[in-house]
Image (cartoon, rainbow, N blue to C red):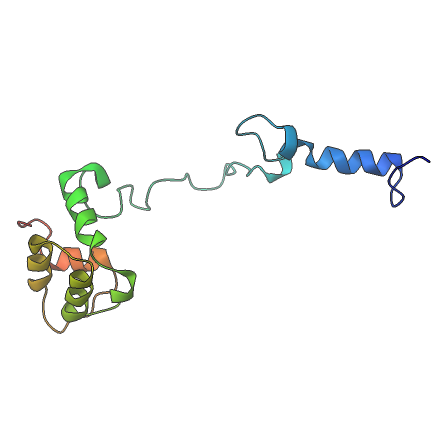
Length: 133
């Protein structure tokens, strides 16, 4: 008794095997088939940049790796997502629940009262990003 696929013929089986061959036997980094590869922008399309104005999106020289960028990242790491949008009290409650250090709590305490902050960047800028931490 010969065992084989009774649903498809030999030709269709080979075509189906060819479709998944790139996923099963491809080289490292080459798992996408050609039709999955994005096409480059056309001649009449704008060039891709980091941000529309060409900076890193925060107005901080040298981006995230700078001292100010690292300080902002540290500040944001003690603010949970559920704190936003929120006012100074909501941010402080979130920071305390995440065991924020005193310098982060001082920065939050310096935020203007009665203002609602949408994200970490807005709270960071309102706290006087250039000041001491």
